[in-house]
Image 1 (cartoon, rainbow, N blue to C red):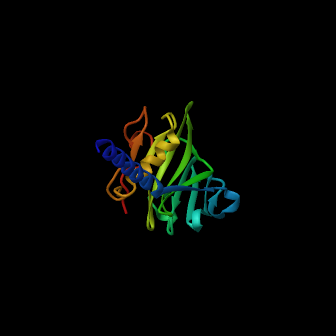
Image 2: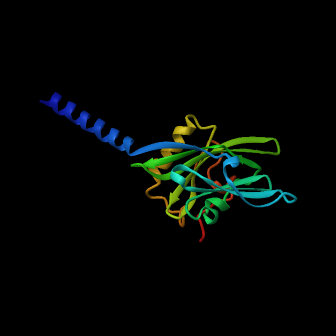
Image 3: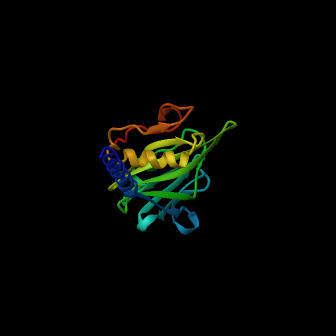
Length: 191
C-alpha cells in the first residue's frame, strides 16, 4: 500500500510539473531593420529610429543613438520604459527576439545585447515584460552564467506575473554585477 501511494504521489507531481512547464512556450522573430519602417533620423548626429513588427504583429520600436541601442514593445512601443532603457556602455542589440508565451499569449521577450567599450566585451540577455501598452526591463542575464538562455526563460516565467514595471527594479543574474544600476540605465519605470 505504501509503495502504491508513493507511486501515485510521484505521478501526480510529474503531472503538475509538466502542466506548469507546458504553460510557457517560445516563439521567435527576427529584428531586421531592412524590414522595418524608418522614422526620424539625423545622420550628422548619428541617431535614428524604426518601427518594426514582431510576433503576431506586435509593434517593436528600435532606436540607436550615441552608439547605444534601445528596444520597446507593444501598441505604444516608442513611449515604453524599455524604449528609454539601455546599457551605460556602447552596445548593439541582437537580431533574434524570443517571445515568451504563457498559454499562447506573449508576456515577455528575451533579446541579446553585446556591450563593447574601453576594451570591455560583455553580453547580456535582456528580459522585457510585456504589460498591455507598457514594456519594461524585468531582468538581465549575464552570458557568463551557465545555461544563460534557459536562465533568461526561467527568470521570465517565474517572475512575469508578480513583476511591476512601475515599482520593481529589474532582476540581475550575473557573477559580476548585483544590481542593474552598475551597468544599465534602468530602475523602476516612471510614467
